[in-house]
Image: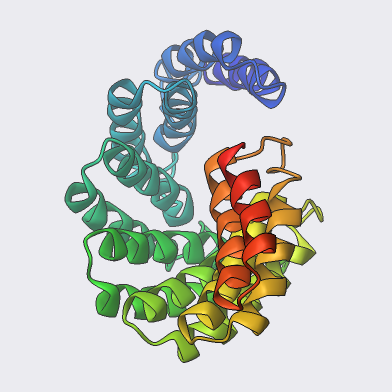
Amino acid sequence: ADSVGTSLHMVGYCHFSLDDLTEALPWFERAVAAKQKGDVDGRVDADSVGTSLHMVGYCHFSLGDLAEALSWFNHAVAAKEKGDVHGRVDAESMGTSIHWVGNCHFNRGDVTEGLPWFERAVTAKEKGDVDGRVDAASLGTSMHWVGTCHFNLGDFTEALPWFERAVAAKEKGDVDGRVDSESLGATMHWIGNCHFNLGDFTEALPWFKRAVAGSEKGDVNGHVDAESLGTSLHEVGNCHFSLGDFTEALPWFERAVAAKEKGDVYGRVDAASLGASLHLVGDCHFSLGNVTEALLWFDRADHI
């Protein structure tokens, strides 16, 4: 039954890879049922069961059913804690499921409930896989989300060191040493956000610039999220603007507009985000006394 379960899981994963989550879901559920019966000797590989439980949860999460996803991720954690048929626990894999329990709580708006799960994910991932190999990029992602929770709770001072630890981890890359510059840049952006919200615009500025450089390189496959890039460009401009240097701020906001017009990795344009950058180009011109030019940009912002 365990072998059958593995095959069922792979059918589900094929559908999942084709973004057909509705089709993938019942295959992962069937994989769970088969794997729970064990091998020919009745031995159950709880870690393998946990992997399929996790994917059922991930499908529900991606389909927007957070309550259902949460239950499956919790089951995945419980299964993975038991380990494989030899009792070996893959702490990295378990940490990933723990992380997604936190993600469910966070996305349901319960940041306080999500925080300890992200902290548990960090602790687990620091132990590595069954061979002790640590996926620093994955570890960095969980550290990032601990920081995000503190940030969303308004505790910027507490969030800052978590984002700094996340950067240090992500710079090491995954188990194969591949660095996701987009993800790294995103964390650098949040370090900038912490300093900005603490009123230290001068300290925030270089972090936003580093975030821009990371976003420009893209993810591990070189895909650039222009919306994310535009957001960091915007915040570089915002720092200069907040420091009263409108001439320096202006080209950064213009670059932010150009990037955001391209949209995210799927080409989707965030009209509100684009409008905010257009408006601040106008604000720069207005502050520099170019009222006629400012009005043109304000008009563009109003007609997004």
